[in-house]
Image 1 (cartoon, rainbow, N blue to C red):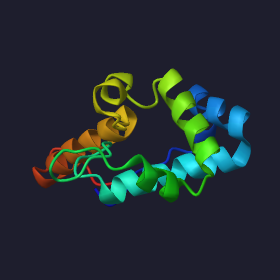
Image 2 (cartoon, helix red, strand yellow):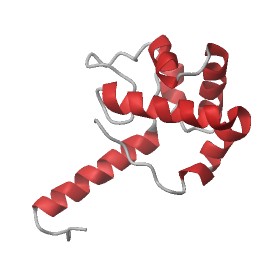
Image 3 (cartoon, rainbow, N blue to C red):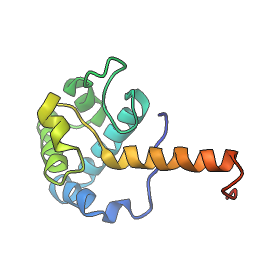
Length: 123
């Protein structure tokens, strides 16, 4: 997946507000950079995994976030606490799974299929 969608109300989402309250604008930027990295390099929408289904290294994700290690650690804690990242995946293999990104990709795929079948009007 080489894209993801940001909704205009994204900064007001309680999960995102928790990041911004704790880490300020740098936290929001770091989270957005993680989203971009997962969208570009994840082998499955919303999942920071490679083609062998192994989690992308945390050092790689921290580097992509442009945050210092301590702030990246805080970002992870907040995203897990608010369930922005799937806790079960983290506990299972230290992997980052972003369910909201996965859902949006699924919705986009369904819409594209309907458009191709002519059952959904073009915007």
